[in-house]
Image (tube, rainbow, N blue to C red; front, side, top):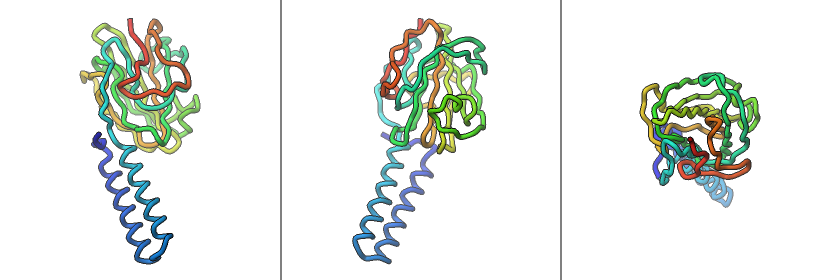
Amino acid sequence: MKIDRNSYGTVILAWLLAVGASVVAFVLLHNELAVCISAVALSVAIWQTIFHAVPNRTPVGSSTVVTSPADGKVISIGKVVENEFLGRECIQVSVYMDFWDLHANFWPVTGEVTYAKYHPGKHFLAFLPKASDDNEHSCTCIRTPEGNDVFFKQIAGGFARRIVCYASVGLRVEAGRQCGIIKFGSRVDIFLPLDSKILVSVNENIRACETRIAELN
């Protein structure tokens, strides 16, 4: 496991604040309260380190097998019209990440990036339906060698304030490689062809790179 390359500053700051709080607590208090303050501060630093980590996973995705781009829970599956780029009806699978999930994101399928765009926006709670369109988000479309388009959104939540996406048009990507990170509670929406075989269900807990979301024809 390693730390996301865009999160070094956040992790270092968390540890500096934790060490600083612990030193001040022991210098000024000299009692059990100092121990409690130090324990809380160090726990937060450890949590932030784990939160921004990029796990070592064994990818199972390919150009025909779509895997989850994030750890979290499936909160919805249904038919929608994707109007930003594809302009057609798709099957949308939404994955919600809470504070305790690792927030590194991964390419869901192997292929070539054909669309990439960042959208500033609001910060509604990520599990709300309106968050998909109204919240800050980054959109990417990948075309597989077989000609299938997989469109996905990284969506900021109520507390998320930074989305990192490594997509650029023409970039060739491999399922299971890191594609970015969303800092704090957030969500990923995946838009799949209508003839896809969906392999997950609502309320299922899934893991990035290792959970098969769908098979493409």
